[in-house]
Length: 178
Image 1: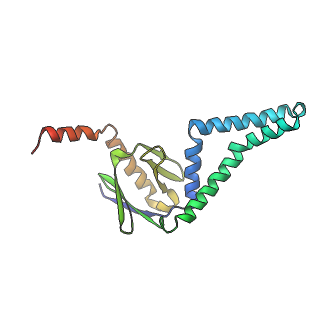
Image 2: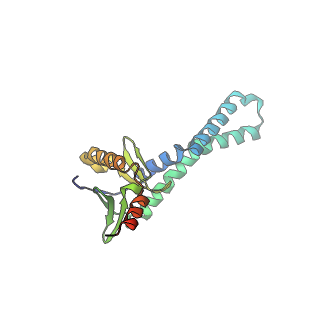
Image 3: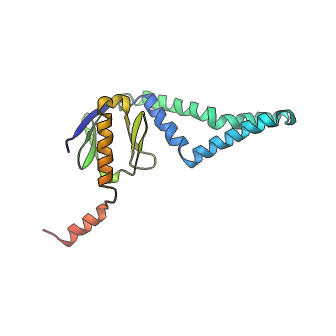
């Protein structure tokens, strides 16, 4: 396999898409939207029978997960992108057969393919999760023509390491010293 190299400079839009997907794809995000929608429906159906305090409470709760939280996520993403402008100037990724290498200036970090816990593909990005909240973000618009090649490489490598257990390899080396 030939190494794939590309650069990514995360923008507020990229961070916002990741935050929205991460927040609303889980059980708590779906539950929040259901609560908001239920409040809106109750408010619409029972509007005449409710007192002002109940109307206001239902309106505020209805807005929490459908308006307030997305606005807060955007503000947080914009602040993070602005704050980390120097830190996250441009990340250089190298996808090789054994690992993913990310570098910036003199700093470099490597993640083995078997350490990737989950991969999410969307039309706009590819997210490689190393933990429940930490992920590499590969925006399609920044990867350009390489995006499909990156996606194919990720699928191949994750498929190869799907049932891989690094502890078995360590045990084998301990039993058979050369």
